[in-house]
Image (cartoon, rainbow, N blue to C red; front, side, top):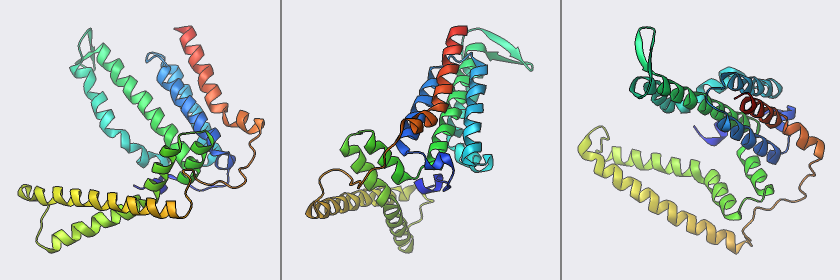
Length: 251
């Protein structure tokens, strides 16, 4: 799934909000989720309610989010095993002996991981990859990181297409990746692709320098972001912070 497959174009207020505001709000929201004690079950439910409100505003249907959230399945599988392999005090649940600490650790992984993935998907759905890079640039993220990320987004599909052509060429010459003894050919193909990608990157960089590249993405006439926009965009993060304080106070 490419980065563009995570973006859901729209004209809602969530889509039109400045990208740097959405990045900061998402980051603070995730920090609040991670900092919440694992036994504060109500707080995690409240976080999900906040995300649901954002989805309603941005008109993001759950059926669009569900298949994209499957990226966390390996972590969920690990969390499911923890109650059975964990140590410490044990209790019976539906006739099965489970570890209390393991069950809480598994819940901690599932709850925080799911909320983090859903928050990230919400940001990606309302903000295109180019807008995310623009927002990071406005937040004064180091120029080198912006440059690398920009080139990656521009050329990842090109590199994937070249990898497919190399694979078809190997198959046309009798290569069958289903056999273990042919893994060497696959490894050499990956090495060749790396070398070609590195050489392409050098050529692109030299071409950019010859055209006046200064190390920063140009942004003519950046729009002014008002205090009202910041306050509106930080509402989800503010609600999450209030829930975190309440959970810590109650604990």
